[in-house]
Each structure stands twice: as structure tokens, then as C-alpha cells.
Picture 1 (cartoon, rainbow, N blue to C red):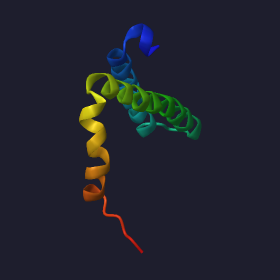
Picture 2: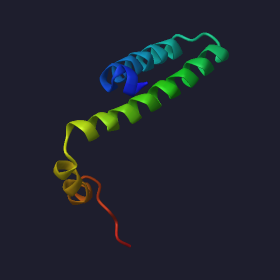
Picture 3: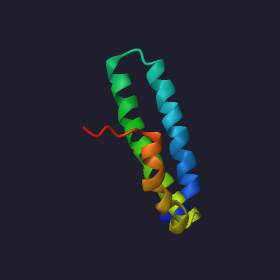
Length: 82
């Protein structure tokens, strides 16, 4: 779908759908309603993850962000060496 409609419109639609599903789950009055809001939110959330990575891969050259990944990650998350 992202190849046909474009990555950014799909990302925006999936983000809006995810937000609506979260609101739906917050006001759910039954378990069935909560269940289906979470099922639909799972598909919308996975779409935002996949399309978001595709947007970054197209927008930023790999030579810019790939060398910094291994260098900056240990500074963000300390690694215990035991």
C-alpha cells in the first residue's frame, strides 16, 4: 500500500487509526470492545513502525546514520560487562 499511496500518507493514516483505537480502548465498556480495539491497534502500530523505518531509509543516506549507531548506543544504554 505504501508503494501505491505513498509512505507518508500511510504513516499519517496509521497513526490516526492508532490514536482512535487507543481512545476506543479507553472508553470501552466490555471486554470484547477492548479486545477488538487492541487487535486493530496492533495492526496500526506495526504499520507505523514499518513505514517509519522505510521513510528514514529513503530520507537519510545510510552513510550518515549507520556509522553512528554502534558508537552512540553504548553511551545511551550502559552495557554491564560481567
